Length: 109
Image (cartoon, rainbow, N blue to C red; front, side, top):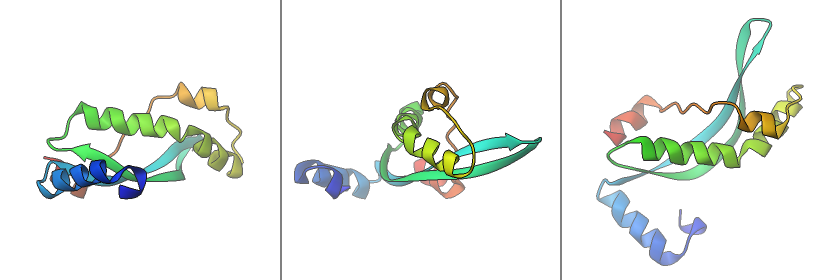
């Protein structure tokens, strides 16, 4: 996180993390695609450092959705490499679901 911000903000994040009020997570972006009735998951980019506040709420989910929208071009490139032609503006109109790993859910509550 320190590489993403200045030393003062990084120190504040560290204090919040140490106090149990902030969790640093990685966000794996993917698309579930249906081909001939079969759903397959195509993994896209990873956002390596995203901050979630404790207790967990809609603000964390909104933050994650915003980050997914910021990576939509990279996801479109990944889908194109898998043989799926998509338009970025079409992807932006799709709903964004956020799945939390069980261990993360335990940390956030």
